Image (cartoon, rainbow, N blue to C red; front, side, top):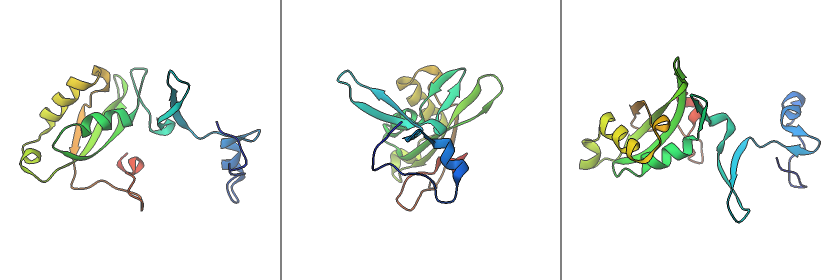
Length: 147
């Protein structure tokens, strides 16, 4: 929640949408943040992008950072997909670098890389390789299109 003179007063001609995010002058950003030991906040993800696996919160940015640690990956995006047993499971979309390492990369080795660096419930269960990921005009990956 944020408040100040720089915060918008509402959506143009959309009173219902304005009422959803503005409460007593406070704007609900829907960002998820963590406070560090010095009292500083770091935004870790967006609430609407959070994946719920067996009741645990999984932040797509955390998954994407681990996937991007792999030398063969150029881009990555994580989303939640429905799963009967756990509610949702993690699916990643990846763009492989165009070099010899990337050519040998497969789903099994990428999941093994994630297992080394993530708690079990955060490990992607599905991997989809793509030539490119959908992006905004400024280059931000559009998870909603991947969903």
